[in-house]
Image 1 (tube, chains in turn brown, orange, cyan, red):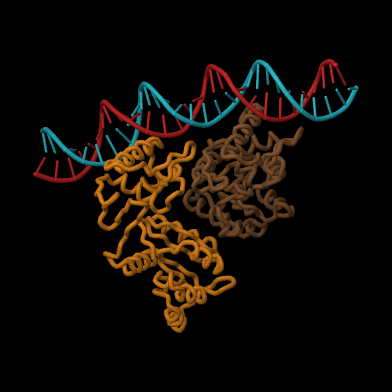
Image 2: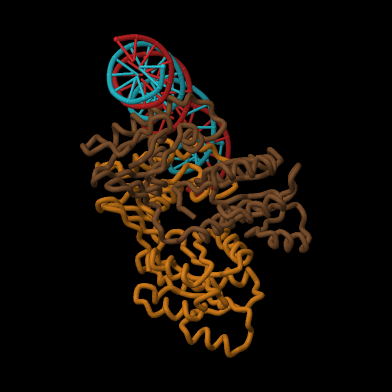
Amino acid sequence: MRQQVQPHVLIVEDEPSQRAVLSYNLESEGFRISEAEDGDAALLMVSEEVPDLIVLDWMLPGVSGIEICRRIKTRPETREVPIIMLSARSEEVDRVRGLETGADDYVVKPYSVTELMARVKAQLRRSRPAGVGETLRYEDITLDAETHRVHRGGQLLKLGPTEFRLLATFLEKPGRVWSREQMLDRVWGRDVYVDTRTVDVHIGRLRKVLCTHGGADPLRTVRGAGYALG
Amino acid sequence: MRQQVQPHVLIVEDEPSQRAVLSYNLESEGFRISEAEDGDAALLMVSEEVPDLIVLDWMLPGVSGIEICRRIKTRPETREVPIIMLSARSEEVDRVRGLETGADDYVVKPYSVTELMARVKAQLRRSRPAGVGETLRYEDITLDAETHRVHRGGQLLKLGPTEFRLLATFLEKPGRVWSREQMLDRVWGRDVYVDTRTVDVHIGRLRKVLCTHGGADPLRTVRGAGYALG
DNA sequence: CGGAGCGGTGTCGTATCTGTCACGCGCCGT
DNA sequence: ACGGCGCGTGACAGATACGACACCGCTCCG
């Protein structure tokens, strides 16, 4: 699986307060969060963008968590995504069933938040080739997620939070064309109402910064589709 | 070995639940934790950052724990790192073999968590002969954990407990950006309800002290993300 | 009991960021 | 050539994050 600046965690949980707790804690740890309140929504979101990890509630309205797990683990493009199951049941039989369906870990409610965080990190570390630095590169551009620094040709560049996330998105998949909608989802977050033209403006700002010390514009405008790096 | 305010413990254990338990308990004791699920990952992580202590499972997929132990103990830069071996076997012969390979202590599963914690602390105490600099440095700033003293450019600085821990956190990973939430976790402690704005104030106080005798502000504000040293 | 040191919160001013709009330009089909 | 469309960009106002300061409460100690 590809490495990311902000690992993307999908939370599938029908209880709003539970979702909020998970979301808050995972965000505090620097993860990018998506939420789904039922299985259908979860499957839809997964098909749109493959997350790096899924926290999946056992009990869900409609399609059960265990079924979701099975489906995700049988699709080739999502088979490798680690899944942590949450369950209110404590029977050993369920634990076994949970792991049998392909879940990578299993946490019983009520759980310790610290423990869950530890397990999330552990799963991510496992699925991510350790040692691959947090530094994204493309040609003479480097972006260090940990220090939040961006260099081009040795020069330190100064860019705002949005431009930083935008560039990080491009650097994750150089060459890939991102539509404005996709960027709004990833950079601004889902359920944020913003005009798509706003993306254009920030692209312009990012371009300006990237070209401050001379050098060609590395961003490519794909008319009618979006933007890409390189 | 590099000395730290929060000793860094590497856990090498393939069983996720076991890892979680160890991680949880050691974190509660104030240690900073890294986890590896097999020998290769462990060696990789050790080569990246030398921990202060290693808790090493005997049975591991791939390279065995005993082999890991031998390798770590034969590298000059990691020879001094204490290793506590965990094993499900209770035969005396294994205990001997474990210690022969260079492990510093040996705990048989199932073990008492309390006992393991005690042994971890004991090893750390032993490996850290008082007086051998527990000093963190960055440029002209030095922080001595043992004497609780901070110098900058030879001048002794006077800072309160919170600012001290704050600075220590920064010095552990110069350059890294810490979010306010992460700092609250590390400096104030988990499950402490404090406004994140409080961090700002203490950052301000720390800055003021660090600049008392002139000198540039070494702290960097990363808008929208947090703070970093350097 | 009272003062000093320290820590947490509220407020305010400011620098910076951000979203939107308007206008201009080039591309393209007609 | 013309008009529609997509895109680039400068300007601007609103929002936001941050820094500085003052205040209040707590604790420790004599």
